Length: 219
Image (cartoon, rainbow, N blue to C red):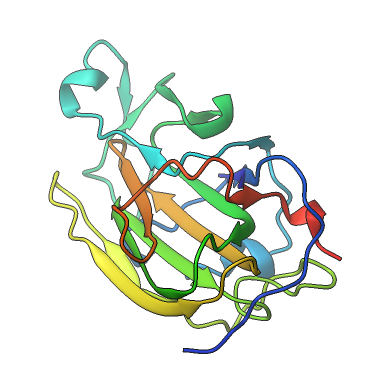
């Protein structure tokens, strides 16, 4: 899976085998429904940084982690919300982000190890939208996402250390490569993210080494 940093059908693709999938981040903020999950596409944003990872998990940080950082109140739309100057977090793939607000877009292929119903769940502080399938997560040919795509599990929105889990179930076929994309956004400092895939008869995993491949592995 490739993270990039920005402030019941078979939707599989036959893809070349490669290493891991990629994740990338883009500057911006999708938290608390401030922006729709497609904003980084429609605004034509380019990633600030990108990396490779098999892990889709960011542990919760807390207000206590912000102590010692200077506070400024710079947002006229939210004058009561402080910005913690210099506060950063290291997320999946070793990417360093502005811990106050950021968007991470994970994108790659998931190779199904067996045929059956898979459950994909997400929780986030503040919001996550996950997409699965060719033409939904992204186009199998050119790797471009659809701005009008419907998320598999809707909006997984949380905050104040309460991050409800939202799940979707889909039938996948063994050996097929399925485009998968997850758009996670955080605002107002503290953040958390967890995306899990549960194969038939298996436990939920947020580390899917061996089953995730970069978008560049497309046909």
